[in-house]
Amino acid sequence: MKAAVIVYPGSNCDRDVRVALARATGLEPLAVWHRESEFPQVDLIVLPGGFSYGDYLRPGAVAAHSPIIREIRNRAEKGVPVLGICNGFQILTETGLLPGALLQNAGIKFICRDVHLRVESSESPFTKAYRAGEVLHIPIAHHEGNYFVGPETLDNLEGDGRIAFRYCDPEGVVNEDANPNGSIGNIAGVFSKDRRILGMMPHPERLVESLLGGEDGKRMFEGLVAAFS
Image (cartoon, rainbow, N blue to C red; front, side, top):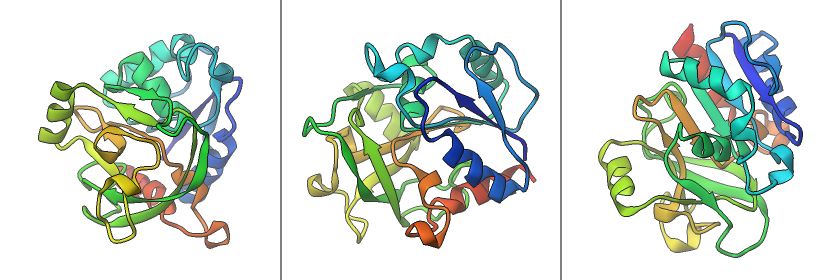
């Protein structure tokens, strides 16, 4: 599986996700600077976490207008999977490739800690290595991770099975106490209509080996390899 990781000024998780992908695939992913307008054909595009353009205006707002976005949009329309993690999720909502917006955390503080996630669907290349209902242990690190959509869009996401992950307690119970940032419906990640695009606030690339505290994130990348092998 060939992958490309888009790099912005202010990206700080691009190397982490490249290491995770290299270990899963045996191939070094491409690092594509955001000012480029094209890049070689790949099986997966990743928008990593960080603070593109220092979150100027709002997270992802400036990055959504970089030259590379047009090519990402074109490839997404042709079915190339796109994974947006944290700031990458924010960029995907700013481009309209995913619905909704990431607002300031309900507690108005930057949050950096491990959380529990419940897998809501295993019916995608990104989640095929997990079981629906399984509880994962994954870190978050964000100030604007409060996912919001209007009632109609929320109904559509629910009805179409496009919610990928929800924040939950260790037993998998979804409740207010398990919601770290105020996200509507405890939503931590969502799919596009064809489930070829995933945006998520938690960082699977930060848990790919036991020395880092667990391997729940590793399985996402292994699942992607299996999906395209």
